[in-house]
Amino acid sequence: MRGELIALASILIFFVAFLWTSQSGLHEWEGADSKAEGVIEELTGGSYTPWLKPLWEPPSGEIESLFFSLQAAIGGLVIGYFLGYYRRNAGDGN
View 1 (cartoon, rainbow, N blue to C red):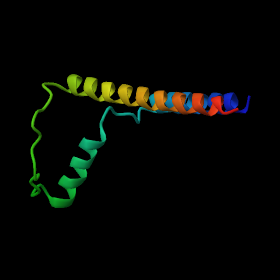
View 2: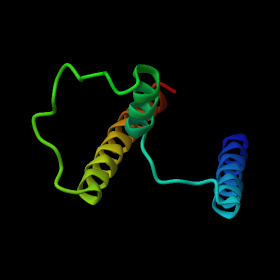
View 3: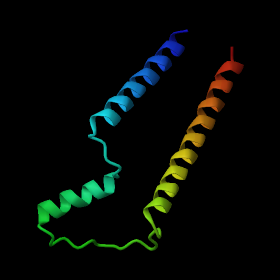
C-alpha cells in the first residue's frame, strides 16, 4: 500500500508541475544540447569550433525528436524488464 501511495504522490506532483509550467508560459521545447551550445557561444564569444562533426544529422527537428523519444522508450523498456526480472527472482526465494 505504501508503494502505491508513493507512486500516486509522484504522479500528482508531476501533474501539478506540468499544469503549472504549461500555464505560466515559461515552457520552451528545447533540448539540453541547444542550451549547452548557447552557453558555449556566450563564454567563447563565437570563437569555439567543435572537435568533431556528427556522422549523420537528422533531416528535421521532428525526426530528431522521434529518435530521442524512441531512445527514451527503449531505455524505459530495458529498465522495466530488468526491474521485473529482479523482482521475480526475489519472489522465488521466499
